[in-house]
Image (tube, rainbow, N blue to C red):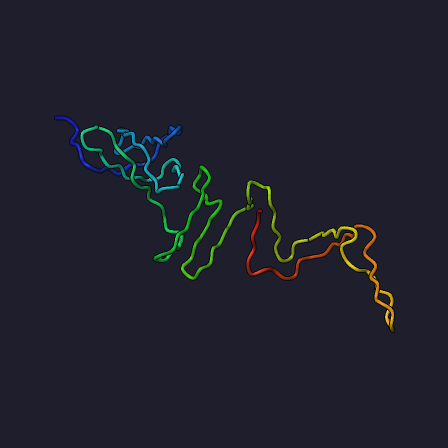
Length: 175
């Protein structure tokens, strides 16, 4: 008597093959490995790590399986919220993006790169250095009492250093 076929199976990831699609090899029972192509949400690229639990569905008439879900422990999302997170190969969470129901977006991680490192932003407490180009502001005014006032522009570039003490309620980084 052969192996009984089921429409769905649960297994754990034992290997990956990633080219155009993510093909996973899962152990669905002791010593029995099953291959499946990973189906993610549109716009998502999230291959699971080894030992993640997954759900496979048999594709009718093909003898092939599709991986339709990966079991993840909750990160605290409430109904309507979305939390994305990335892990290292040992399963340790290294970065997290939380879109919360109160309108807050939280980003956690070691570093935040914007536009591939092209544009930069600063936070409260960061050091800042500004450069004011020559001939862009008035440094002194003479005249008055019946004579027209005459302003003198800054004759050279001026540089200042300080610490950001107040932030903006909105920030646009880029163009």
